[in-house]
Image (cartoon, rainbow, N blue to C red):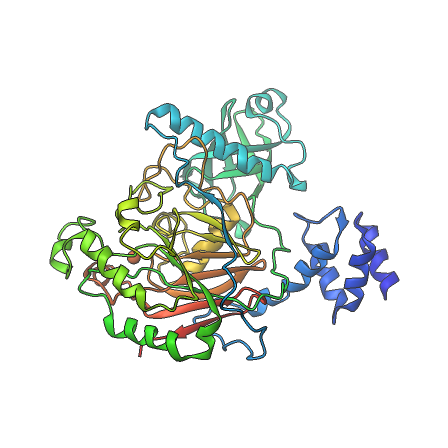
Amino acid sequence: MKKRILQLLTEKGILVDPEAAEALSRLQDPMACVDRILKDAENQPLILSREDVDGYAGCAAEQQAPSQESAPRPAPERPKVDKTAPPSIRIIKDITGNSTCVGDIQDFTKLFNDRYTSIKRILAKRRELAGIIPISKAKKVRREVKLVGILNETRTTKNGHTLLEIEDETDKVQVLVMKGPKRAGEGFIKDEVLGIAGSFSKDGEIVIAKEIIRPDVPMNSAMTPNGSGAVMAFVSDIHVGSDTFLPEEWKRFMEWLRKDPVAEDIRYMMMPGDLVDGIGIYPGQEDELLIEDVFAQYAELAEMVKAIPDWIKIIMMPGNHDAVRLAEPQPALAKEVQAMFDSNIMFVGNPCYLDVEGRVVLAYHGRSMDDYIKNISGLDYAHPLEAMREMLRRRHLAPVYGERTALAPEKKDYLVIDQVPNIFVTGHVHKCGIAEYRGIKLINASAWQSQTEFQRMHNQVPDPAKVPMIDLGSGEMWVEDFSH
Ligand SMILES: [Fe+2]
């Protein structure tokens, strides 16, 4: 069997590390894993390592783990968590303290250049894009070309095809994407960076696309068990100060934290934005506020979180309702607001990359879901995990400039997903869900607010008072429900 596996892989040009061969032969179904490696043409490693095997083996669950709102609690025989050990948490990337923008047009050029360069670097690793050339050069050679560009514009022709305009640092070009069953649901979003393999039309005016290539994440992104038994909980969109905040449900959650054995294993609690309802966020908001002063809202939150047991490290991130600049990336809450809270709380920006117990966590409030849902047909507010998959496919949290998500002209694009996370969490849409995409754990972290007037008008039904959790050691996810 081992020989046959090695033969299959070497025939495809993949060298196998002896440890990887050993790991493969120990799998329950080694051929299924080999099959996944061979099918993953985009990211196939040249030398297969043991980590690769673990990753591909872990991805087995993807097909069987569709989006879900609940999953069974983890097995009780998890490693014992030492509540007295210091938390293992470190910021990998965060705008806080690193903002450079002064807001002139030059800075937007730098932002888009950085986005282009960062995502092109990812695309350049793709086999289908071997031999990328600049658009200006492509216009001269007029043969089969591989291009990478930022999408400026999308139009539908009268025949129902799609015409894109893409741009790189040298020039712009029109790209025709023929309609067809394979193209259905392709979904283009302005200002995303994509790869095109195609050839010029006879008159040399446009490129006819054969293939659209997205940067995407590798197939083998699964978490391999690391022995930690610590649990991370996700508590989003608390909206303190709103008259639709749910105090009874919150109280139930706080009581559960004090008495349920599972709660003893929670070492981290991430709060991905909309901590308070804020003020002046939308016209007429004052009619829906119980606390009309934003500092008083934070003071109330500071009191509320005192009930959370002190073995839990709380991480607070702002969202579009919080009292920081609206343009993303948003820095952490101001020092005078932080001073209202206990000193052990960690404040981060939005988005933020964290290392928690050796796991890479990407947390983003999720404002850009509004733009993703508006621009990509098939996406809707009821299924935020699908929008999160689209972000990962494009390796960008909020590409669109000039629509709902305000972007700050930083020199570096903090919204590029340059590192593949183990865990990707968002809030914003007040839904609750857990799923997997290519081994990455996706979490949308509910809310603590019942249906608002705005949501009622737009027919959005929230799914509040739920807490998704993940065992950072095994990657097991589940949801605790405090809604009744
Ligand atoms: Fe919210």
